[in-house]
Image (cartoon, rainbow, N blue to C red; front, side):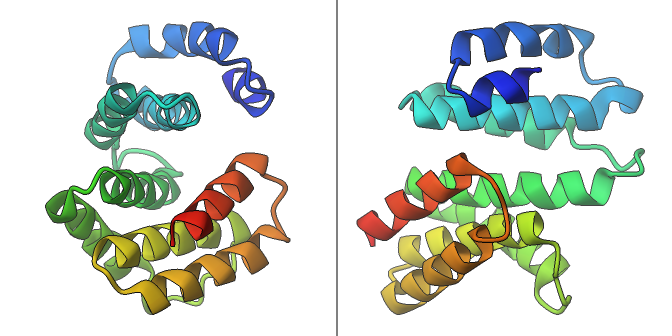
Amino acid sequence: LSTLFSNYAIYDKAAEERDFIFKLGNKDKYAQVLAIAHLGAASDAFFQNQSDEELYHINQALKANSKHSDISEIVNIITLAYASTTYARHNDEEKSNYYFKQLNQKLEHKDNQIPFINSYYKLAQSQNALLNTRFKDAEKYAQQLLVNLNKVNDWQALARAYLLLAEI
């Protein structure tokens, strides 16, 4: 339900719905749910210009990530992409590069045809390239991201892509 509220920018209601998940804590069987809830909260914070809140939830998502789940690899990839992207936007080169390297090791040589995973990867590639002043690469990845987003119905990802292109 929190995702639905977030998709319609009803952030206070989304936060209320996530509060239940946060109260469960980081128990192994709920770790992936907790990580996803923190990523959603980080995304909401991004769209509300709440940098400290965004960084807090990224850190919590990284802590919550668990390998004891059938979706752990997907959640791990999304979490690493969010972390790399967020730290790049906050000009934390060390952390952005660290998480991007981990993400890249997971995806670099895979034929990633899952559109929503690929869009997170392209966003991280572009944002990380921009941070490292590789402007042509940043623009190339951002353009590829826009092509990928034609396959995904996600206004937030599209907004991020256009904001990134405007920054480049």
